[in-house]
Image (cartoon, rainbow, N blue to C red):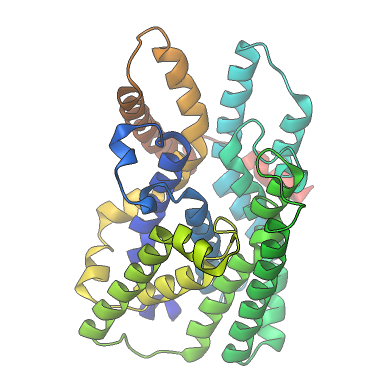
Length: 363
């Protein structure tokens, strides 16, 4: 079984770290606590690429040798995503209503996971939820991709090469758009198409699928030696860190703006993911502990609740005249508590919302 030779649990902590980095990108830039740290700590857009690549990789490992229907897959994904997604959306809508604002069109788009498809709406209401809009499209087409892969992509090298070519073509198009008169930065149609539009990120998800397929078809019987695994882990980490820290230098050297927040890091994250998951080094074994798996489990909770919780904290503290560092720390504490509670009470199906989703899918 693939699960016996792939240590994907070692990646749980990095899901949590990626979520925290995205949160600091959104709300921590003004905090003195964050301002002196390396660029990696505010590399939020890059971490979204990590999530897309990881999703394709993990889903393929989980479902490649499993018998399932499309309806079963979609139902499970909805049960996992929709309750917390809806809760976060409801909080944002209530806060907007409290402030005297009500936007019916964005509400409909969010409920249908369509906001990233329509320019000017990706960051409406619960801004970070644009990621879920993209992800739900990838979930929609995943069963069809996996079926085709099993039929026609018997050569793991060819499929990986095809995925890299799709990624390369996507990046060429995005670079051309980014360096043309078409691009007008935020807020603009061009910004929405380059950084939030689902086709711009599909190559990351596809690379994750091809990476998992590469591993499965390789049929590794054992892990690399511990010393080799540790070396490969350190090299992959250093490579990503180096690239993120030197983005400005790279742009100045080649003379072109690059879409760093739109899938350009996907191949490097794939190397990182395969290296960690196919390792029995002390590092990866330590990172598979229950504590780190728990942190990975709450990553979606804190990600999707970050914006509504921040709005609530802003309202709560508006009369206290605190400095931003204090506000940011209080926000992080409340978000962490909210994330844990939401994970146990909602993500773990403690409330009976699943029956409604089952009936909705059957229709």
